[in-house]
Length: 326
Image (cartoon, rainbow, N blue to C red; front, side):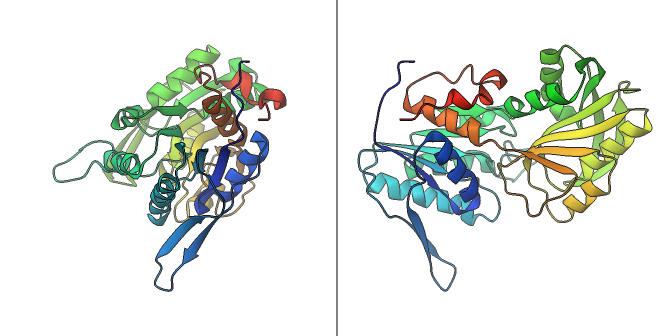
């Protein structure tokens, strides 16, 4: 495959996604890099690389979930790698936090996702790998290469294994997600419906209506983030009231704030299928996690070997022989 051999590939973990990073390194075929974080009594902290990374390609895996310490830890690790003379620094951000603030939707507010992109670049990163950005245009906030991976690489095989495709219908919980539902429907040659919602304020739904017919279908709700769970659970209830056989949700990033897990457990949802871009606070019988470790490991291999990520889709993800040891 024209692979470039190198002994200087390092994979390090931020504290937010350490378990995921450890599995990615194992799949790639190298040990997880040795790093520590010294914690001061007042909450200040200092990351440190405990091995030489001079001249190496350094991958730092960290989701920027709340609190903002996780974002700042990523920035500090990038800065430390640059000062330690790494040849190339790649930030692997499975969940890109603050992505919902991608524009000015009212006066006097920040565009936080652009601010964070600027901070990451100033820290000294050479490339970013992320997964299911809330808004595609965030890639344009960077002046460096951004590899945007998709949760569909994990969800599509799951759908094909579990259902007769002709009985499936996709649904978007809001108008903004219609593009995603349309992509799934087009790929599998079936249809989709939309739940139209009106918000009184952030995280509070005023009204929701279903646009389309779901009668006698297995409906799959698609979204990139589940936060409070209110939208998804309300959409699931409306879909079942309109005659669906079952309703599931497939959502990449399980933010699941507050009592969101309890809402899912008490909802009409038969199952919530998600990934491990964010660690679950606790397990639930209704939540099924598909790991993105193979996807990230293969993306890392291709970056190291200067191979294209264009065809990194579902047909390649679950082949165990996909990763070639370096």
